[in-house]
Length: 310
Ligand code: RBF
Ligand code: MG
Image 1 (cartoon, rainbow, N blue to C red):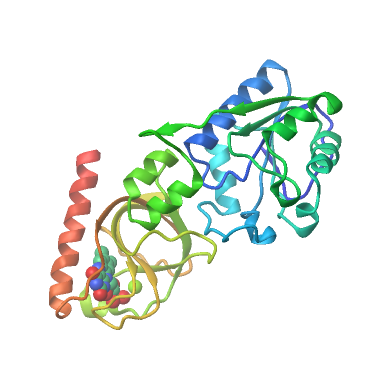
Image 2 (cartoon, rainbow, N blue to C red):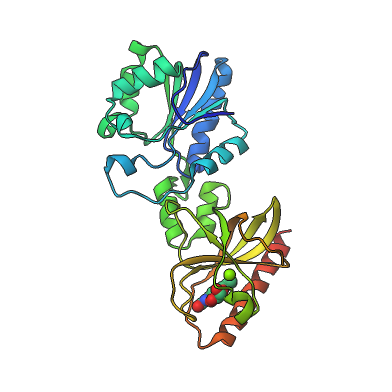
């Protein structure tokens, strides 16, 4: 898959799947599968058109949401799907973009530059100036610009449409397992391991890796979670705390993971925390010993859970 961070001039006819695709959840995966099928049937290249961040960050049309997938994460997920596309066009959603009318976007970008012959979108797709364009707009111009439109039905989960905003709410409420089901993968945070105060190791005897995560990324609800942790391409079991450590200092929010049976110095490394299960809220304990007792229980719970799955 070739990735462009600006708008290329594509020579071959394309099937284009367009969307914000934040999270690349089951609904998005269904759009991509459909688009892949259409591309194969018509002997066209599959092109995914998306953005590096949420368009609301520029349009100010609504409260800017924290995002589920950073642009490099989107690329990785796209590559991992069987519907692997030929091209991914992922421009910054700029002011210039936001003032294109729906017809200008269709004509100048989709048709002239990207050679759209089929356009495939999800059920709640909006585009163009003030999000005035929708599936009907795409259909209205399809004769004039000579392309076909496919609108993919929503994927339902327990009677509800799968959507990025539902997943954001689930993560904010600590409902990680349900969020994972809608994503069809484990929600993850990636970040560089930075120096904490080293208190985990010295005071508690439980070393933790503190990670720094992009400010745009949605952080799940504060609390303790079972995870798998990827370090230098190897997977480990981990137990992660997201919170302010009220037992100690109620400091800035931190994300720290204790990696089981692991003792390497990994400062400066990029690690990935894949969340499996929410265990409990973060609490203020009556002293360090009580906190330590609880963390040892958390660790054993995660160890058992991962053994039972293995
Ligand atoms: N700190 C708290 O004040 N309350 C907690 O409930 C709490 N739970 C934790 C659970 C785990 C699995 C880990 C790794 C840490 C937890 N911490 C908690 C953070 C702990 O205070 C922190 O690791 C030390 O302060 C060192 O930074
Ligand atoms: Mg630490």
